[in-house]
Amino acid sequence: MDQISEFFKKLLGTESWPARWHCGRWTDFHGWLYIISDLAVWAAYFTIPLLLFYFIKLKPNTPFPRIFWLFGAFILLCGATHLIDAAAFWWPAYRFNALIRFCTAIASWATVIALIRVLPKAVLLRSSVEFEQEINERKKAEEQLEATNKELETFSYSVSHDLRAPLRAIDGYSKMLEQDYNKLFDEEGKRLLETIQESSKKMGNLIDDLLAFSKLGKKALVKTNLDMNELINDVLTGIDKTTKHKAEIKVSKLYPANGDYGLINQVVVNLISNAIKYSSKKMNPLVEITSQKKNEEMIYTVKDNGEGFDMAYADKLFGVFQRLHTEEEFEGTGVGLAIVQRIISKHGGKVWAEAELGKGAAFSFTLPIK
Image (cartoon, rainbow, N blue to C red; front, side):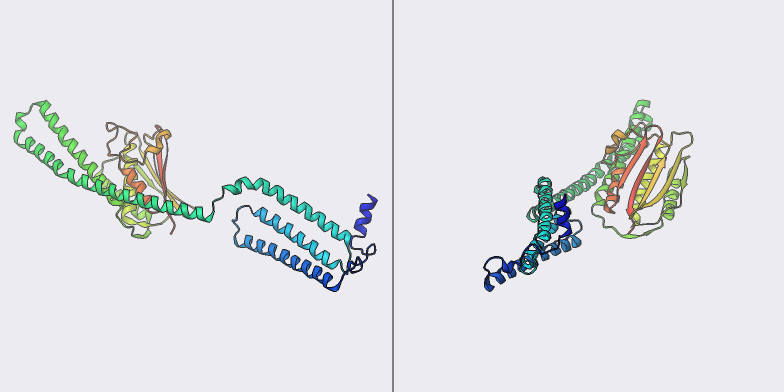
């Protein structure tokens, strides 16, 4: 302990050693070559950490920043040993030199340990070449997906168009039979004829929904500032004219949005119509429409106290022709929510549902503020 105490008391002292010029036989050339070399190494070792620290400042999200700091400290201390070595030709502070070397040893081993820990993760980092390759692969996949979607849209449009003609013929001939030969049918014949007409009507609705879905991919967005309360009121006026219902509809003060008026109108029509439909069997059907602002987006929610559904099947809700209720329970084509999801996705938003069987459902969608 006495030696340690004396060491730190005389840390900067030079009385115990002569200046390096006086140790051995130094020529001027040999001495200054040694000094200049040490100073050059120190200058480089001093500059490297500054560059590393500046790099971290410019790139705050650089992976493993601790390694950069450790390397910087290690290199800076290494440089300090060279500076003190050069100074020893006039100032032989060997105690201070030993302390700096000890700190350098600690920093070097701290860097080694950190590197050993980081190395398995660092090996998994992708290089710029790998990133470029991944980007190219993604671009190819996106191009293939876009081409496939266009083919599907064209196919859906063509099939829907081609189905209309025979469907109109079926509907037309069934009406002619009803008008001209109704008296010749017994009750079973009349029931079958009515079934044909209802089926052709449902098929027509399905084709209309399928066409609407296929056209969404081709439609360009025309975004404007939307007064959502005004839009909701227009939708409710249209629903009241075309649909008989007893639902109480509560609309809160809604945040304005930015989007394509026609498409967002279609989203709201589908969600409110569904809420009315699935709560229609309740004694006091209730539909609530609310909004909230969160981060950089608006969240709009249409909630009902209707049949609800099992959340285990929630992933099927937004698929084409996917239904969680039978046609006998609630009529529909199974395309409406798929249209909702596609419209909201085109706007850069998200759509999801939360429900409890027998207690209702809440459908929410987001729209960016700008």
